[in-house]
Structure formats: structure tokens, C-alpha cells
Image 1 (cartoon, rainbow, N blue to C red):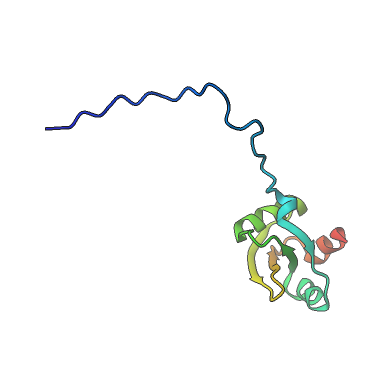
Image 2 (cartoon, rainbow, N blue to C red; image 1 turned 45 degrees about the vertical axis):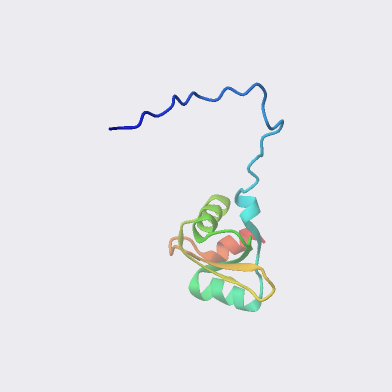
Length: 109
């Protein structure tokens, strides 16, 4: 014997519960904060074809990869990330051999 379920009608609210809907502010500009330009970062650019960025703490490797590809129009091979003792997240972004990281770094500034 199967128990009958009550009729579940779709909700029809009389008014909207929120006057302003939340907007998505999580975009490529919010993910990447700034490039790192220390001596070790410059050495990474020259030797390993890798750019170094300070990124948002909540950013994932996939979101960092998409943001770098959109902002600088380069092909990203791999992303390594770490959280520094200061609490910032640093991302090492390896770029494909087709484009040189030094040219991209010069374009960034």
C-alpha cells in the first residue's frame, strides 16, 4: 500500500522579499589583486616562464587560471598557490612556451 502525498502547489508570493537582488562582484579583477615584482619573482619569469600574483584568499586554482587567461590573453599551463604567513594568497602561474612571460610582465608593468 502506497501512502498518498498531498498536492504541492507552486508558490505565488504576493510581494518580492528582497527589493534589490545581490549582484555578482566576483570577477577577474577581484580575483587577481596585483603582480609580484621581487627579485625571486623576476627570476621565475625569466627561468621558468612563470608569472607570480597576489590573489584573493578565496580564489581557486581554476578561477585564477581563467582570470589570467582572460586578463592577459595567454595560455596557462599550471597554477600553484600558497598562503603566505601574512595571510595573502600567492599564485605561481606557468605560461605555455608559445608566449614569453617576460613580454607579458612588461605589458603588465
